[in-house]
Amino acid sequence: MAWRSFVAMGDSFTEGMCDEYPDGTYRGWADLVATRLAVDSGPDFGYANLAVRGRLLDRVLAEQLEPTLAMRPDLVSFAAGGNDILRPRTDVPGLLRRAERAIEQIRATGADVVLFRFADVAAHIPGGQRMIAPRAALLNDGVRDIAVRQGAHLIDLFADDAFRHREMWSDDRLHLSELGHRRVAGHVLTALGVGVQEDWMLVPPAPQPTPWRLARSADLKWAREHLAPWVGRHLRGRSSGDLVAAKRPVLAPVAD
Image (cartoon, rainbow, N blue to C red; front, side, top):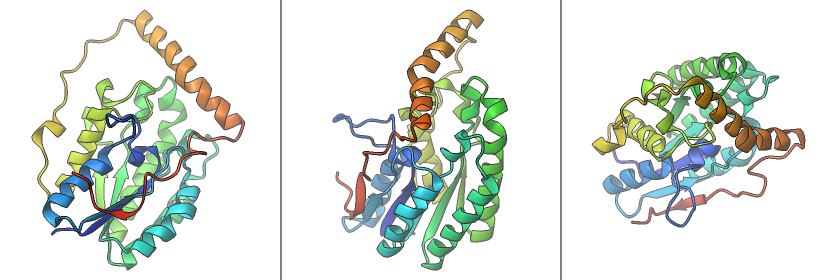
C-alpha cells in the first residue's frame, strides 16, 4: 500500500543522531524511510519527525503523543525507552505499560505502527552486558509482546548480528553511524513491503580482533570523551536535548 503520511516518534535513535547531512543537521533512518515512501505516494506525502535526543519515554509520551494523534497519520514509528534503560533504577514493566497504552491510542486511529527491538548497544560498552543488557532484554521482549497484541510491525534489530559490527555505530558507541541508519531504514522498508536499495543492507567485512592494550586504550578514550559528559549531565539533571526542538514538528512534503 502507499501511505500518505508518516510520523516518527522517539529520541536520538529516530532523530538520526550521528548521520549528518552536508549542512550538519541529522538525517537518520526515518528520513530515509520517508524519502522512499514519498516516491510511491507522490508530492502530497507528508512526513513529521517529532523525535528529540535524550528524551525519556515519559517525556516522549507527554510531548509527542497528542501531536501525533492530532495529525492522524497513516503510519507511525515509535521507538523510546533506550535512554531509560541506561538508568539503573528504571521500572521497565511500568515503561512498557505506559508505552502500550499510547500505542493502543495510535492504533485506534487506524494508523499502522512500527516498533523496534533495539540492537545490542551493551556489546560495545565496557560493563554493558552486566549493567545494561538485563534491562535492555526486558524492554526488547516487552516490545515484541506489544507488537503481537497491537498488530504492529516489529523491526528486530537485536536479532541482526550485523549490528555487532563496530562500523554500524558512531564513536560514542550509543548512536548508529550512517551505515547503521541505512540498515535500519532497509529493515523498516522491507517490513512494510517496500523496495529498498541493496547497498543499504551491505555489511563491511568483520574487522580483525583488537589487541587487548589497544582495546583498553580505546575504552579509556571513550569514557573520557563520551561517558564522563553523559554522567555529568545526568548528575545535574540535564539532557543533551534540553535546548533541542523537533526537526520536523508538522507534516510536510519530503524535499527532493
